Figure 1 (spheres, rainbow over the protein chains, first blue to last red):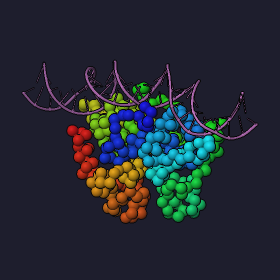
Figure 2: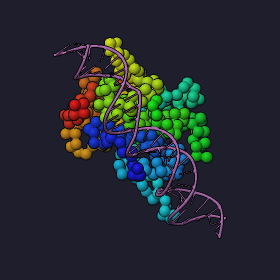
Figure 3: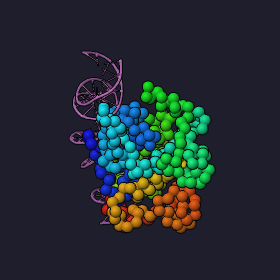
Figure 4: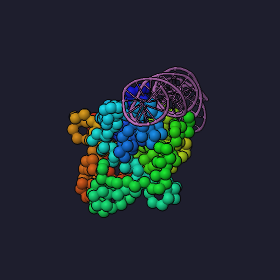
Length: 167
Length: 167
DNA sequence: GCTTGTCACTATGATTATCATAGTTACTAT
DNA sequence: ATAGTAACTATGATAATCATAGTGACAAGC
């Protein structure tokens, strides 16, 4: 392997929409990298450090995400020549999936008290300021919540973990 | 391996909610099995046939899903003794994630005309009858859409594929 | 009462992906 | 000239997956 996803029974041509996205999203590395990109962490080394994935895996998956049109590779410096990765519109639309994952986890994946109190990440609607909790539509203004609409505030415990990871 | 998920860098204790669910959902087999369970296909052989996964993988993942409290193993016949798998509330809540995946695919994952015309699966809100398209809240009555609220009608092309798979 | 069939699995060996670690390239800064 | 930084590539050990075949418990037909 060196150019993307594992080669298993191929589901990319199934007509089932869940099967199709499962080909892309049913991969731990991809989900973690998308998380980083959605949070605006675009540089290779940052992604590798925050996800704990080896550079070979990060490299393979980023290439695949670019090939799939989910991400774009851009030069952010000419000398020295350096590249980073940005989500395309197709990639940004995956926010909904990761947000649903986050909501599920906040409700079902923690022991009581594990995150201090309150959620692991608190999300606030940028346009109206309401704390959205784990809602799909803003409890403050009723708007649908999509890419770019929310501002996340990690709990102290999660912040500490993130600092430890990149140190 | 024989008792669940691959043993990679462990993320199940990360405080990040996306990381935590990625440990569960970042696996093609798990997503496909959840799709089957959400569609009410509960028997082992049906799941194996519809997903195209080998029985060893199906077995390992179902065990893990039961251990995680996402699914439950029930006897549906005493003689002969036969078991099938049901989603728990924790499992049913994953509907939101798979529905987000479906919505993303319908918008981004098909070539024009690939599904005939219209979506690969048409969803109708059970309580008000509206076609929900790819909305997060019902365009007919404004209700939030969750597990059990929708009735799916696969396109002719998808139906044909499903029949071919189990034949 | 013996064969065939069904269903939920388990066993096995070849193939393929992942992990940890180290190394490379192309520059900048001291 | 040496050290540092960022984005990777290379390598070998380990671990997961795939395809295929087989098992155990029963039912149904001849």
